Image (cartoon, rainbow, N blue to C red):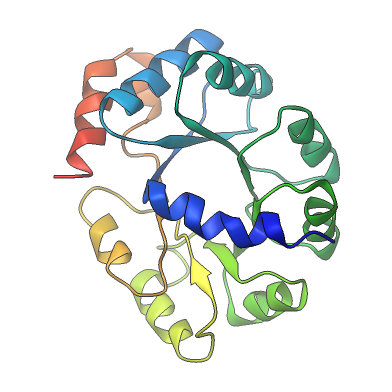
Length: 210
C-alpha cells in the first residue's frame, strides 16, 4: 500500500481551491470549456466519467491544455481506476467509499478522494487509511453545519464539499478550517456548454477569485 499519493492530495487540491466538476459529451466541448476555465484563473478540473466520451476528453485536455490539472470524477469501480492509471490521472474522485476501491487506489498509486456523508463513513475511511474526503452531496447532508459538527471529533480530517454549492456560498465553505477546497458545477453548467458560452464560463471562473 502506497500512502504517498493520498498524502499529497490535500496539497494538490488546496492549490486549486475551486474545482469545477465537468460533465461533457464531446472532446471539442471539453477542450473549449477547460481553456475558458484556465483563462479565468482556474487551475484544474474534475471530468466526470458519466459519458462514453469522458476518457477521450480527459486525454485530450491532458495533451492540449498546458499547465492544467486534470482529474476524474464519478469513479465507482476498480475497472475505472485501471483505465485512469493508463492515463496517469492527477486525481480521482468517487461519490462514495468502499474498502476495495480505496485499497485498489493505494495499490495503483492513484490519489483518490472518496465521498462520505456521515460520521460513520468518515470512520470507515479512517480505518481504510484515508484522512481527506469529499463531503457529498454537501448541501443535502447538512452542508456548513455538518462540517462544523465533524470538526471536533475528527480534528485530523479534511474535506472537499461538493454538491449544491454555488457562487453565493462557496466562500463560506472555504472559510472553514477543515475545508481544503470545494467542488462545483456553477461555472460549467449544461446550459453554458450547450450554448457554447465560453465567455461566461471564463467570467464565472474569474469571479471565484474576486
